[in-house]
Image (cartoon, rainbow, N blue to C red; front, side, top):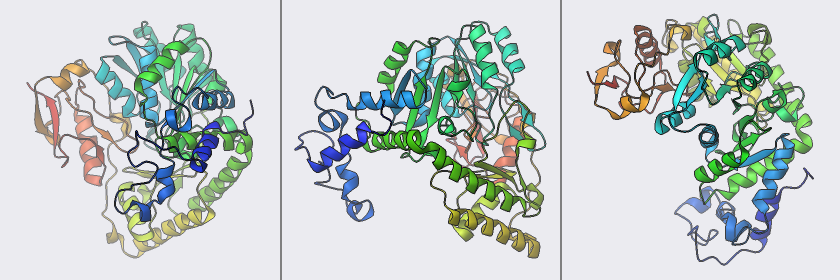
Length: 486
């Protein structure tokens, strides 16, 4: 197929040249009416592009197959047999894939560092989600991928599992041994699903880690908006081989995708695919060169540390465009550093936690951005040396490796049954009745039905007090937790 064409982009350009006289949705009618202030803020062209796929980009029955051709071209670009563009982010993509491989009551294996998207779907639909342990690095206090040994052990204990979901690469850019994991899954007759939200560009540049499909994965989910240039919420589902029923995956997609998908998001996915398929090597060679320079400059700032390939497991690879910086030698938290950089240099980091900040270098990162971050970090270190009181001192919190997952009650029963609120400090020994997922990276540390240990309490309290953002807590003050009523 011709990767230089972009059916959605071209159809959108045609409708802008020859607008449709509409008597349906959207009600603004290609910008004929706009909410107050939007013309000055966004411009009319955003509204002109906000049309529907039928009776907009295509005819009433989608007879021109504009979206369908875009999917087929994208499937070829990623080396897949099946592709769908998703406008509800990779959360929606993951829910779609899970619906295609497991039914309520089935068992599905999920890596311990999976995003809340996987756990929420299992919770809402009655899947038995079994957590597969991941490697942890106590020195860096971060989680890596799943080892083949851990997967084999979990499958031996749960031989009826319908699929396994692994995160590769992690938020920090570290991959798992996808080839070995896929071989194990296939020996058990189940698919390997890879949450590759941060790895959508891997297929288009040989200097990046290998794409999951190229290493035997059956399904991969990419957040094309995260690093590749698509609009926010732009996600891609790809599948390859016969391990997954593609008809069922197609039906699941139709169940979850809105009947009014955002055409600007779809067109941006189409254009992103075209740019990467045609010129991905050049695009990412420049991004990688900028990232390597940034790594060198940041590593020269004493006492900061930068995660390198020497720090990761031997069977893993590292996406060098994810730059993890350990700020704990400064005696302050990553949350405080993130806030200070934003307030004093207008810099927003990709992630911060009790010990780290993360810089994500992507297609839109400029040399000026790189210089600004290096300048900001140098300024912070110099100011702290002159006056250590400018940021609160923080003790190193308990490590991530102290946390366990002990499910003692079905999640839906814990979520929907009688509950009460208790203070964080008094929650040890209780059963969680809500999800607590510090974000980013949005990995749940407690889910309904999980036993809360003293280690959970110590970790959560330390991170809360250091400035963590707990996603969607019942108590927004982060003083109490929702637990099963005794």
